[in-house]
Length: 365
Image (cartoon, rainbow, N blue to C red; front, side, top):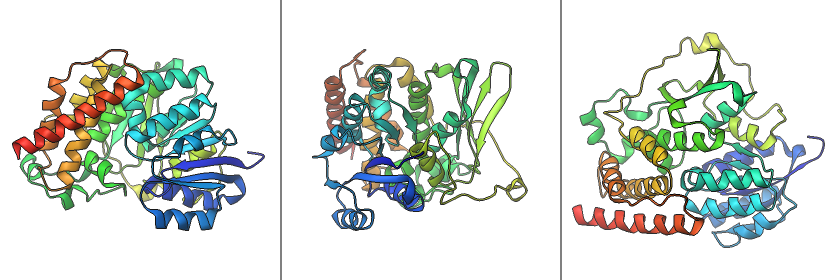
């Protein structure tokens, strides 16, 4: 990186965005911030602007297109949560701007469209999720890779009974043993839906069939993911459970620098690493995600929307944790899948499924 990389952050006031700014603060001589976009936290956005001095800031969804039309950007970190990340990502790709992607919905809702457009415009999409970032780092020649192995911490209920999980409080669901994340993704980690969504993302990012994407539970969160080559060799990426590391990798790629969390890794201190198969009876969301991914079309957009609305209802105290899966499955089963949908059709399905899910929750409670 001979000159400063010009970067904008969509979602700068969220968990990933704030950590990204901590990374950039450590590497101030490597970056120039073009724009910062926050959700509703105007106070924090103002504080960030005062510290990092971007060309301009954006509060809310309006104005995101301006950022993605600004060809001064070398890379845009899409760190917002929810469907609002999809259209800006597509706009940035159309303008030939590389993407550091931390927004799951972009690929879960419209992975085929996004990856096709990225190829057409010769745009790099570097994943920020620790699991996909790990796979990205392991792959040298993708044609020789036979299988992707995605690790899962197992969340707060890994060693709890199904009955304990069904009766869990919001506080218990948010008590993740390894990672500090936003509330929605933390609940997804508790149900393992986050792993299901990551399977769909991995399919689009790396072009692997779903039968070649495996999930393994690894409670220590040291091995972030691995790949198996056709000759049986397995390459894994290891590191301490900190999002600063994959964020830095994504925004500095293909370069590496000493960063905020750089330290000598000690195998002796780790002592041991455990792995086990996921319990699909206890965490059926993973099987549902596999089904949606294999079905294709708008099935994944339906899955995402129904799950998200159910998670919001759980966080609001309207439903129990396990009902997130039951409600998502119910809505998913009624959806008439559209194959090869347009972006507009995807957003229409998203809107319809959210309304249907909220109506169903109101009806049963």
